[in-house]
Image 1 (cartoon, rainbow, N blue to C red):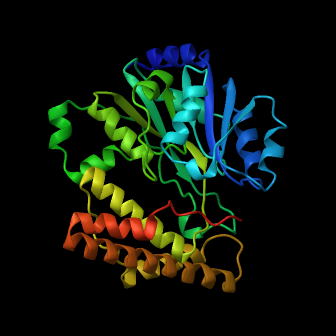
Image 2: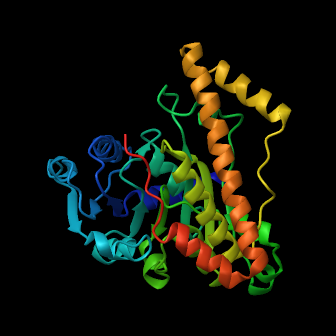
Length: 331
């Protein structure tokens, strides 16, 4: 499409109403940056719907300071990554629905504008951005955002036959959706709501959308800062549940995670040249990454051993270890 056509399309959508939907629980240390980052965007939003599932740390008091914020209370025992977001969709007024989370914040003031740029034609029903990790010394330096070059917008649409012909890896990559930074036409989420699921509601939605013939787009320039400091238990459970859902919905089994000598040297180099840290702090981060790698390897081993017995056994093992979604470490 010509640049002038894209520009006129964006100008039309800039006048469209946007509702933001954010599930939260106990995000007092980060929710202000999230809300103020949204309110300082170059394109204004109509409302911010916060789905709170039992915050007790002052999050609600902070949210009440903002006129555009509407709080919907969710029973913590009834929280579900898919259905809870559907509650927000049902309450939203906007023609576009922007989904994020309470511990994320926009990378810049043009986050929403860049999301809108993905709607390059009337056929596009949703646009997904990218998470990045800020250069802060309490964040894992091995994960800091280090851009190499700008990436263009990728638009996807498949016929039923084309979708069925994709390999598990291709299908997984096509559905690499992320509702920490995703903008949808409201009609899309009302026609295809999120499935009731404890994890991967975003990737499952992308598969459902592509199966229905929707056009979806990825714009990696529409970024948010988002980071979880993980411990070994969290990494183990997150890896196991990610493996389980990717296998269940896409038939995808990745290669075993390995860290050879060259990989270790590369990790040490990345950490050592990162920021103003003491040698003790750098050693701590190298050890941290090795611990997380070993936790991921243990989860992979459990996954493959369970699947080798049967798919029913895999489901049983996953339920035993990850009956509830892993809970991030709060800091």
